[in-house]
Length: 62
Image (cartoon, rainbow, N blue to C red; front, side, top):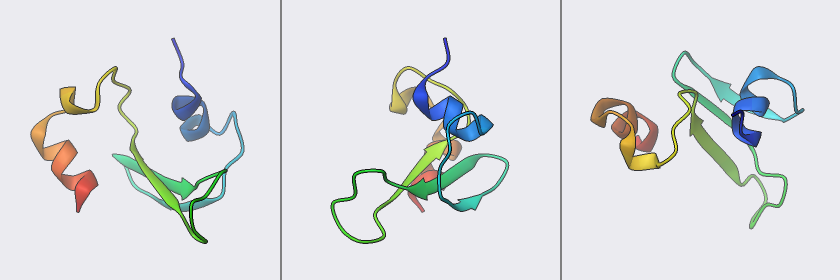
């Protein structure tokens, strides 16, 4: 089942893209805590963040 984040990555839901590569997508938060609040998400859909492979998770944190 597609989540809101997978729909954003596919372009089905509009977003203000900050950066993108083959593994990650970064965009401005719709309800920011501060000006420029950016979310970075993996393009690989997963139920639990820590189910991602270690290298993919580490790359997102850098």
